Image (cartoon, rainbow, N blue to C red; front, side, top):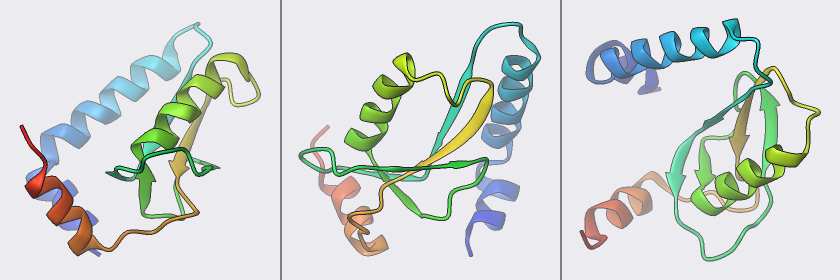
Length: 107
C-alpha cells in the first residue's frame, strides 16, 4: 500500500538508480542473477526462502535467508540471467516489530 508513495517520493532517486543499475547488468555479457529482497529483518538462523521471478508475493526477507540465497546462487546456475525476488516464508513479522527492531538496535 505504501510502496507507490515511497517509490514516487522518498525513494525516487534510489529506485531510479536501481533501475539504471539493473539495466546495465542485464545488458552485460556476464552471467548474472539479480536478487531483490523485501523488507529486511533479523532472525538467528536460516528458515528457508522463496524465489519468484521479478516480483515477490511476500513482504519480508530475513537477512540470514538473503545471505543463504546469495551463497546458493553462487553455485546454482538455474536462475542465471534472471531477476529473482527473495522472501522468507516461515516467519512474517509485523510492521510494528520491524520498526521497533530497527529503532532499538545499537549503532
